[in-house]
Amino acid sequence: MKKIIIALVLVFSAFSILSCGEETTSEGQTTVTTSGVNDTTTQNGTQTTAPLVATYWDEDANGIEDWTEQEITLTYSTWQHTSADVVTIESLMINAFEEKYPNITVEIQMMGASSEEWDANFIAASEAGTLPDAFLVNRIASFLPYNILADMTEYYDNDPDTQYVFDSVSELGMYNEKRYAIPTFIYPRVWIVNLDILDAAGVAAPGYDWTYQQMEAIARATTNENYHIIGTYNTSFYERELAKVLKIEAATTPAELEAANKWQALGFDGTNFHFDDPAFLSAMNMMTDAINEGFLVGELGPEDLEDWYLDSSFEPAYNGKVAMWADASWFVKDYFDQMLFEWDVYPGPNGVTGGNTDIAGISSTSENPKAAYQLLKWMSFSQEGLLTRYQLFEDFSTQVFISANNYGYPVVDYGINGQGVNEIWEKIPYGITAPGFVSPEFIESLKNGAYWINKESVGFDEAYSVAYSYLYNTRIGDTSYAAIKDTLQTEAQAAMENAKEILQVLIDDLNG
Image 1 (cartoon, helix red, strand yellow):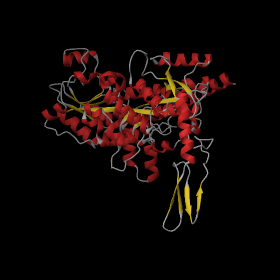
Image 2 (cartoon, one colour):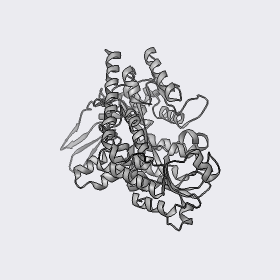
Image 3 (cartoon, one colour):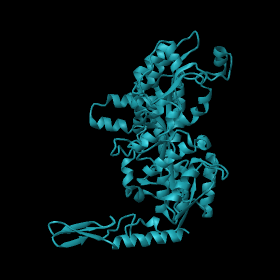
Image 4 (cartoon, helix red, strand yellow):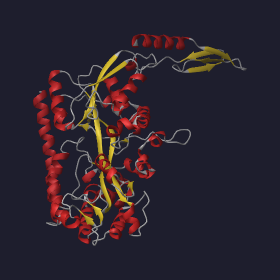
């Protein structure tokens, strides 16, 4: 059936190209009207039709992108769809892709759910020659030695829509100046504000454009030791995002601002950490001061929880004892139903929101890599794909809530249409959970986020394993950050470089 449809499309296309209508103007000029494939010019008494020009996606210059002209079967793998018996947003998106491109059949290839299972199954598939064509990537470093990932640099560079990808994530998925993965969605670390606690303390709720100074002022005002009300809980904001906020704030030249905007979580700029930067020192000193003042609590052990709340497993944030805290959207969503108080979601202070991204790639053995790239794009950042995804979420929300609603946000901004509407932003459905999820400030804060890019960056995990103990000792007061910052910078950077060297040895050994 697909062959018949394709044949009819091609016949119609050819007919449209050959059947040109002519119209003579009052000046005696002849205008040629075509189907829009050729460019037409009008001259006195003559007509000129520009020839079709070959493009990267249309190499035979017939006006139809090559990957839509032949019957193709692709396989796709995602840890968001791990059972053939369950409808997920991913399976619905695949169905919609097949409807739009009837020449392509997509089969979902199950590769596991856990990180360990995912990586092991991909390595086995690489050895057996059964890799899926397109797939999510758990860690780019895990796949590179086994020749699993295709170099997508040409596809990405020849895709006009990549100009709309946020600067904050546009370099993710690169290794040795080649692109092996694309960012798919941002999964933010949201701030939850307990509006009941603010109201009880006589504190007005901040605007979505709040600052870190406002956050700390509210935390001070809402802390109540008698009732064990905590102003703000866990130190992750101070350790992950605040350094970038302060670096941006301190910038006095365009060059300094550009450098600050490149920072991700932990002050990582894609190449180097900046644990020894004055902005990071200031962030850690602010954390220590907040802990000492009592409005920031890093963590509570079982004994403290028993003493404060008569329950060693008590969760103060979700049970209404914390005024504000930051948490991963995919994690906190499981607690929304038990949060029996008025609350809202906020972006990160000063418009810098943390979080993670997913990345995806295509296999080095794919027989149809251009089609596989277009499938990945449909499943991630294409404008039509995003509009389709959010519409499907709305239409099938009762069926796909768990799998679809990890609060994934686009990595692109296609701007405002002719009616003055940003179609994608308007379509994001998360306002049904909390109004802050779709506030303009929240969405804008993702463009300049500080992301935890361990999937995308070789050595990030190894560097953090070194940094964790230093940050923890600072948090609990065993040392000052000033005393350890230089050692931390040296050891964390060395851990990253060592991980890169080990990876390159693996690549050379397995592909030599």
